[in-house]
Image (cartoon, rainbow, N blue to C red):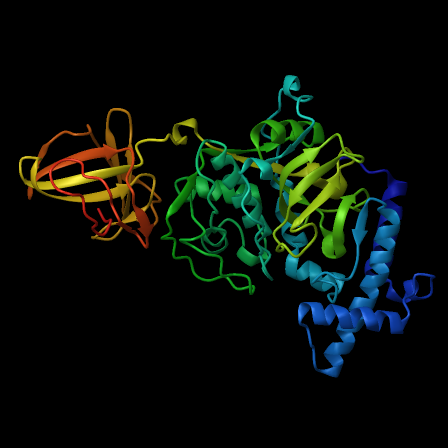
Length: 463
């Protein structure tokens, strides 16, 4: 972490103390909010967000927090001429302490963040190229998600980074599962915090580099609970490694401009009331939140980063925040990490599926055909799981004892279209470039095109 000017640091600490804790002090200043005005805003806030608190004691606590946040928003607006803060957002009835407890992870970063180290240096020849980029416009960023009242920002930043990196390797953009990290990653701590680098380490070491799709393993921790791990989702992406970037905004920008979205940690203490615009004074003191940098614009005044958050699309700029570039706003440069995707995992237009034919007469008559989508984790009849892949000169079957295509695998490699004698007759694997199939709950249906003798028909996709 860069050395701080002691005088400036003292000023910042004093300001934050006053903003977050000094309601009595602020009430004696011109920033004091009239009860009548605050009550009118509070009524609109409750109606907008459907928050009839009911009990007098709770109503009073929420109103006092709301009134204090009106003062805080006034202060932040005065110091951020290019941004806007107000009390119309869903967090305006929380005290700063409540907000931090529910949505930030300061304690986890304080305990574990010091282990973070830089692993890569971006070549100077790349540093000055791209003036602006927005990876949302290039189809490699999924819609904004919502972590709910669970400190799982680290999981959302991790999957967001992998989603983008995977799509940039010529794969389809797919939404990946945060829940597998929250429930199964035993390096991190679920709703109590984690680090993106540690999550990627767990994916590599304990999950064979794979992350399941969100559809197959949906998020269920929005209420703050951590369900047991079941880990039997469909593989959506696979990473080969990960690396952290230098504490340098120019080098981070160079990497983002060339290689896509990057996960970063920030100090999001003042994000509670953010509504829009470019933040030029964030008062960053310590890391407590994981997010995703999806672009930047050097040509704007002021230049800014585009950051995807995980508090839903109703927060900020449809779920995003813009931070000024060049001044380490919210400590954005202090922790940047990205997954890496092996080029051998890069997808190609064909083949997309493997058709396995079991025949009674050679490999041409009385055949029943089962179609397996490639790159998908399938259940096996005897338990465990399997994946198939189609290379240039062979088909590959990977058989796992685990249900989620993780851990060691038994590998079988067979030349395509080779007719082999099996215990039940004859077996032949045929690769196909276009199979009209819809995958639902580990089954493949609606196959459209004949391959050898007999029309291929659907069977449960098990190996």
